Amino acid sequence: MDNQMTRYTSIPPAEANGLYWYFSPRFASPEPVLVGSKMGEDGPIQMIKRFNGGFQRFIDADAFLLGPVQPPVVEGVATSAPTATLGGKNHE
Image (cartoon, rainbow, N blue to C red; front, side, top):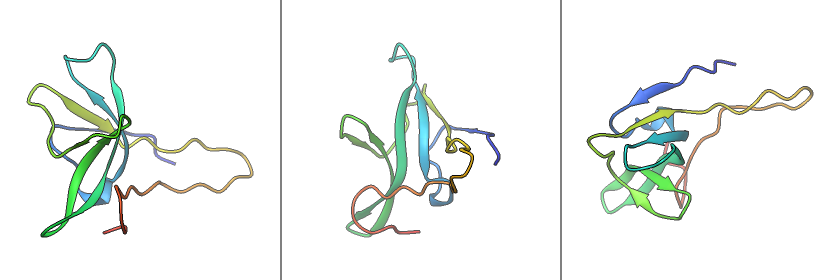
């Protein structure tokens, strides 16, 4: 499994949905967030979901995302890369 993470300064595409770290000078430490699709009026919209329940459609100008974070390898347990759907159906 590849543990390489990518730095994004805008919301990643649907192919890269998953768990990310959100880095911002406004925070004392990075915050975990989910990137995924949410159904909008005109179809699926890529968004960030914070663990406090808030949604965000942008990344602050001085911030970035690092991810997606891959699940750990556990002997005897099959894992695959997670997909993120932020409410409703998965729109991949």
